[in-house]
Length: 244
Image 1: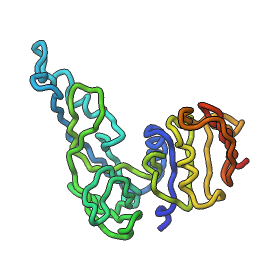
Image 2 (image 1 turned 135 degrees about the horizontal axis):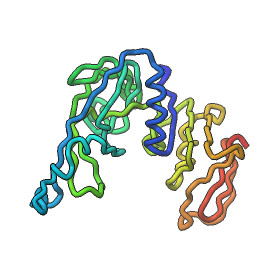
Image 3 (image 1 turned 90 degrees about the horizontal axis):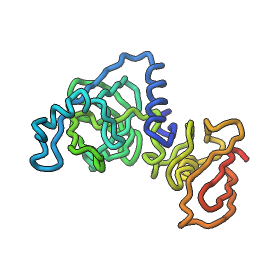
């Protein structure tokens, strides 16, 4: 299957959404839009009413619909048959429905999505994905968001963090801005089986250098080289020259 061993990787969810939306719009298949149902639960007991104003009045549904989190699906989910998707929750590990599993959409229903697994030990297996209630973790809001939606994202492009543990024959790396976390460039390069099958878009200019993040407490000054890049690590940053 063409998409099984190919992916586009990017550091941020905003970058991933940009790529996915552009590719999705270019496809001629009929589009289906799924909207979530959102509600909230106050974190502190008795905090639902403060100074005579209810929590629901402070944070109406229209506002909840605009909230985006990396760990749950967005309020508006646009899909087409044949599109790759990424599972965001463990649904049934025995049949391969785990967080991070990639699938291809085969049929779009009102209450379930039929898809075919393209990664792991259950490749080619047809499965059904239902709506579930999801809540993000580690937010600064004074409430817990409860979002009922399909636990998936479009996955022509996925984040570098989500790609960890996977290997691809062909990888495109979309870097409109520098990576922001320790070791992300190493993760990108380690996903591909050959240096000839990786293409990097560097949005930082024509000098072909990309600033990386290295924790100086882990690494001191060191120089290393490999088939993909020549790297010079010095305290807090790493310069990468692709194809050097």
